[in-house]
Image (cartoon, rainbow, N blue to C red):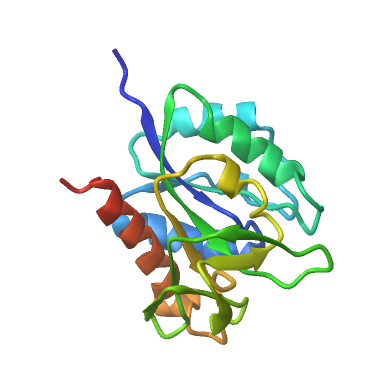
Length: 189
């Protein structure tokens, strides 16, 4: 019997996110589904499941982006299919803050600000601590509360945050979010 592929969902898919997620996947010994990038997500959930299963090892980092669609956009439709697939085990999600005309929100278990500090508050797209506890605003986060995920980590805009998460620095905020998910899921045990 094949074991389930272990996946981390990431709610951003622009070019900066793609570069940062690729770097982090390499750092942790995982895989990034590079073809999952796009603003908005271009591949269907079924296509992403096939690519996830082609990855030689896990954890597999997969990007989803709605490009500001309100409620369930193309990234979230694909995310639902991946998250509910019987051959996939979702370890957690990284909820990325954004400021769009159609901003939505989701609950987060913890957030990481642009200085790498954990906070019970959400963060904004710049990685600064927000005003509300336990929630984050973004454009591809509407569905996260419906998926019964083990952990959701909020962060600012991947690969950016005033240069604090730059690829040249090794995308340290994104990496820390991935490491928290791996730790809390028991992945490394």
